[in-house]
Length: 118
Image (tube, rainbow, N blue to C red):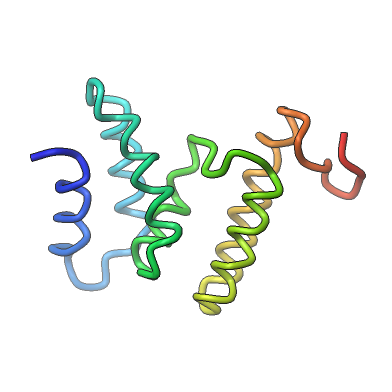
């Protein structure tokens, strides 16, 4: 079984009412202990952000140890599309974007909070 199959299995066979954040935490832990396949967790998570599946997208929001877009502008576009697709996730998406800002600011790609792009 490859990591994508495992991730899909975990989503499809999750316990009722499992919070997406809990599965995100488990996947983050797996990313550190798997050889070779650990990085794929983030690649698959990026795909989940565009999947049209609200639970998978919400799990992917919790995979916050990687850049989920190649640029700040791309991340903002992704966040905007998620808020349109899943209005119930709007506040989570906004928190995710604000948390990601620090990383993109450190790369010189995002405006500092309350300021202009650096």
